[in-house]
Image (cartoon, rainbow, N blue to C red; front, side, top):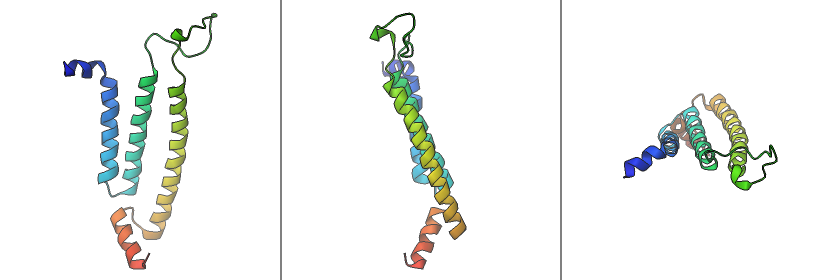
Length: 125
């Protein structure tokens, strides 16, 4: 019975698997670039999940065409708006993280978070 529900909702399962991959990458990697990639995978999984929850089969985008004003004919535009807003924020956060990573690399000549932490302790910070 549970396998049948999984096959019906396989898109949500894919989103959860992607989130788990990104989260494990974020936790287990020591390289800062790989951590940023893991965070982006998590973001993508979240956007996929939100888009899946906002879509209803058989309904159209909320643009009134041919005089149809029945609410049941359209999908809710809020999840897609949240996804678009999240993508913009994600791109901004990724750009900031990459710029900080470049600054760290120029200063410490490594992207390994453990090595950077040891160098900071040696500097007395």
